[in-house]
Length: 352
Image: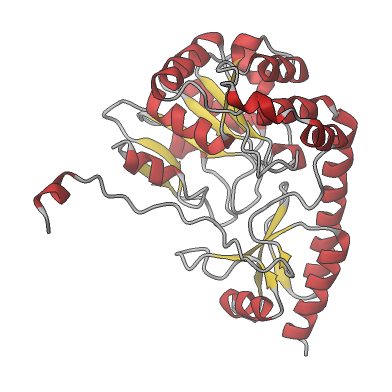
């Protein structure tokens, strides 16, 4: 080992879902939206003046912030935007989790949390979900340096009630409680109404899932004015120009088109419920998903074998060889036609 390697920060990186080069597949492994962005977004992309790319984008993303503030009924000073919710959460870890006490999050959850904690040298503890993949609120009523968890959870899709979440927020008034609502548009109620009561609450959402803009990378946080000002201080100390000018404009158009947003999310929800019924007929069990995916296990066939057989049939789902979840596959909800092909493939694998 070279001497300079003694000072290298070593972490185990986050491993995203596989992105195959072959486009002739059914891709149900990364929770992308199966429908295109809104017409307004497509129009912006077609008509965008490329000459403006020689100029820096608005570092404050003011127009996008204002559009989000109008949409969610808050003041613009309560909105922070970043390059996808991953960037927003990373900034929040850097900004708010600086105690010697460990931050806490579930043992089965978004696997980026422990990566960020390692990168920023933040101590952390994983709290086990119960056998139904639910949070035990008592585990979070303790001394800690901060809390984060998704609602609905990933990869389980389980939604926790606002009553349970409020108990956790109110008990932990001395630390920041971050709720990652990447999938909230597919079921359940957002924690946004709780912002009026709690100044330690930070809510994070994304355009990647319900607004069909995973490739654009837009995420945002909503919190009280002071929390957002602290986030912006860190952002402007790291990189002022985080969101490019094209992305800011298409983000505004995506927020404006509320009818298309509701249409596509409702289609995904309807397809999800039909898929649940079909999976049950084939012998699958799963928690009641309120997201755009289903976390399923078969009563007889091992999950890894199903994952591999589906891949042979050019259908990609997500599998983790990890404790407690190594007999589950996560299935993103695609179009009706894609889900019909999935069910047909599963019938072939399970029944023959």
